[in-house]
Image 1 (cartoon, rainbow, N blue to C red):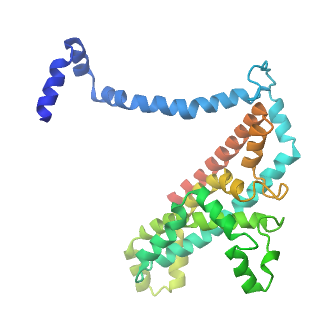
Image 2: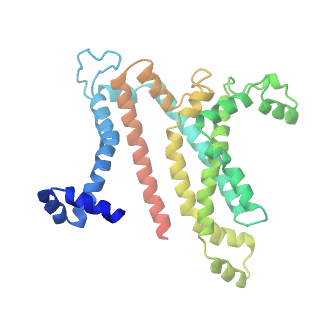
Image 3: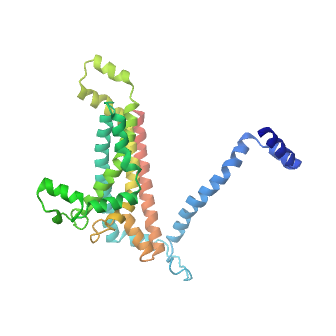
Length: 315
């Protein structure tokens, strides 16, 4: 059946076209197949980036498409770098990134180290730990918003049971001091399994004969951990930190679902500020400049970090 179909296609193909196809090299044929995908990626990723760069030098507003667009030069960038509210949002973002990365790395590596012991039922516990990572951020945000409710939320009753504080006094999402930590807890709960998976891959890649040699030299378990396990798993830990750092720097959905940047501007990270400037104030040119600054900051920091990661891998 397949041969008959191929023969029919071959007969239906015009002879000039058939000669051209036969003359294409393997490399040319490969480019012929992947070029549509490359063009699609350029249209989806590259064009919006250059369009945003262009808009960042203008006064364009998306809600006034017929207004004359003026070239402002670097005025938008100067306003952003001199705006105190922007720097506060960047500090809030740095606070979230630091604490989420720290907690996720510590808890994730600890879980990976425990699961690597291959105790009875470790496969079941691994699957159970991975459940939060499989959920949609919208589901997680609404689920934890319900848990944080002071009247009926389970979280408040657990804290009240442990500390003796009345549940109605525990306002996780509306308290200025507790609101940032409420988001950090949710993000840590959701993405620690991701860090655990990467760390577990690093631990499983360590050859067993190294530990056997260490045991022959009578090295203690603590010595093996500091001299073998941690150094050889360090590139994987750093890789997990890189991935989570980039994602948490762009944190938006969880903050928007839980607090919306409040109370006040306590949890207003850079992405929330960008959204308000772009879709509430309609300062499209200004917000485009802010987006480019964020992109350059993330790209620059990630590039420096990757160089440090490569040096660690080469040791």
